[in-house]
Length: 78
Picture 1: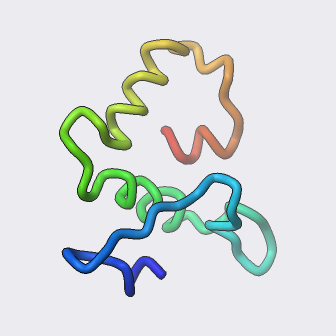
Picture 2: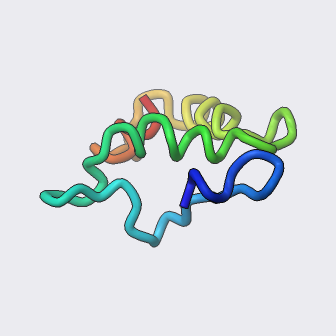
């Protein structure tokens, strides 16, 4: 999906409730999908100040001790 809908043609954006990052053995275990593909999909085509990195900075500001984290969030937002 990400390779077909890319560039100036279109953009794919992951939806949190869908099954992305799955491997044959586990949910959300595909490190490339979680560490690169999803963040880049939420950076591309976005206005400055409205990107994945802006969201990460806001999370760091509001939860510097990472109280509201989880193993998945720690992988997505290192």
